[in-house]
Length: 271
Image (tube, rainbow, N blue to C red; front, side, top):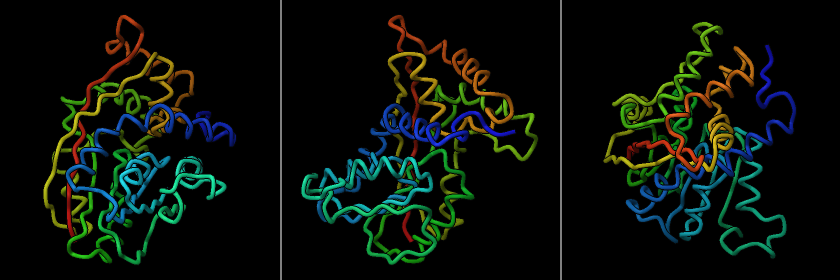
């Protein structure tokens, strides 16, 4: 059955990408900033972002003076990244966007090297999709190049894990082929790094609360992650909306806002 979520029309896909950029992507800013602070990202940094989304992490690095390159498979998110980082008229855009940013569709299977920092910040990306890009980065990276992988922290410290159970339960009619929605296991990032031929060189945990002004915004933001796509295909959009809203009730505040406390983890590795 065709998904009624965002695959029906181009406008639906654009809406989901816009929801990601305007609602959900900012939830990971503490993660981005923590990594950039630790690795001292600045004017001398040449950063490659794998799965760069709508470009917020790249924008924060560019604001620190870094030269940034991004790869993204979602064309709608990539279009928003271009709006943020590559003005239509270079002479009218910010100086940081001129000659210091490159955005490319797809995933890199070969890289030319020359990067000081490679990031894979998308915690929703399955290992099978991330591994080719990480292997390409490992094959071309200088020994001193830092590669950062990110994932969810322990489920007991991630309130959103309870809401994600809705996605797994509703996707069950699709059978074993449906990808289970789960948070990172304790050693998942290490296993991914070793599979790509990378050696761990430090890690950290960052508090990334998910906060929304109201329940509809929370539902839209969570749907924009793509983690509920299989659930929508197995049931329908209305059913998924309803069950997400019900799962969010424990996290509603008296003023109608929604807040879920989460911890994310990052792993620094080197070739």
